[in-house]
Image 1 (cartoon, rainbow, N blue to C red):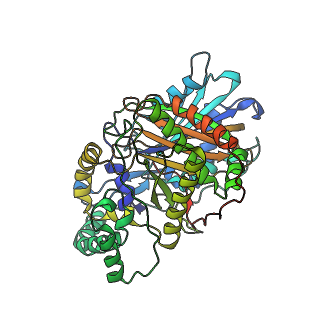
Image 2: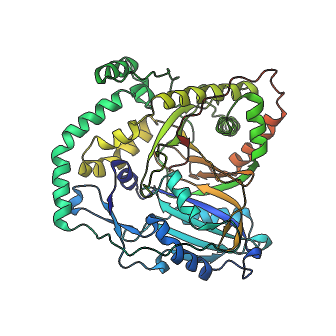
Image 3: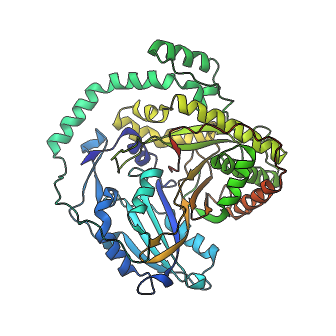
Length: 498
């Protein structure tokens, strides 16, 4: 049994009829190498029954505190029924990429049932070439990018033959009683003012790194004063302007979703990175900058200043055993979409990412967690949807989220079928705009998932095409005579979150 943190609970609170807050991915499989020659619902059910105990998020459900006086708890589901979580569907012929993407988008738009453990798995049959797909989604309140990858890893094998796992230990956890929950809520309510003041003080130290707030006059002076007052002497590099321009991608989203996906060779990304003294993630950001610039330029809507992207960053400590919940922060960085020359754009993105990572390495930003902790639980639940909608109408804090999740560079198997590709699918919200770009590196490829709100962006296939064109463009660039200094990567790992 564990209680949701303020950040975990925030992913529950910002759900609305138009916003579903789960992380997901679609694995495309070759079932021919499975021992039975097929991946079936029955084989996936057997796999889940044998390994669910390795991923607590799959068997825990929410237990609400009466009257919403405190954040909910994760507790075992005594009535767990796999039939409520594992489903099967078949695409109509010919089972192409767009049909699969449309089916996944339809599934992704649906909210999870909060009365049950917050996840679903869908076996999708009928793909061309005899392939099948497995789409899995888990609520963001239960996982972040790292714990989501760990959850997926428990179901994967190194060969078509499934590995043996230890059986589950006898269950010892019980749901908290009414008295215990109310007592905990009373303690948290009484101590909240002191905790909120500490959160505000810590958040003030990073005032110059928070979107919107950093643009206010005197924000850097206030941040410097807060650091001196709290005795925080860690050096912080100065960040560029983080004011997001208005684009057609911004504004309140609708409930409908579209998905586009595709892959680029990881060796090509590494080649560009090595030639220019950059990291793989720097090149990913440059690819996204080029694709977004081309998309906006086609529509006559290219702003004269760079788009602002939020990049989720995992802050789990090595050896952490927290397998449920979120341990993440975010870097906010400009994307250099205002730079016309591709070589200059690549250098500008690399410089911006270097500054953001250097800042994060010396003083990891905690403002996201602190911001979620300022208001008491009952007020947070009421205020969050209205604040998100208002911000999207007035001053969007960022234009989009870009996530890069590192994965294994060798083939893996799910239910006996070889995983050919794994396309991540993340979250859209009113304050992060109508597009989310997430990529996952797997077995020599970078697999991209581009999730969009069709009312704002369309179906995303144009953006995916621009990503491929951007990769070709970077490969054509002349090799610099002397590569610049390599960026210092922070201890934290850049990963997906929404």
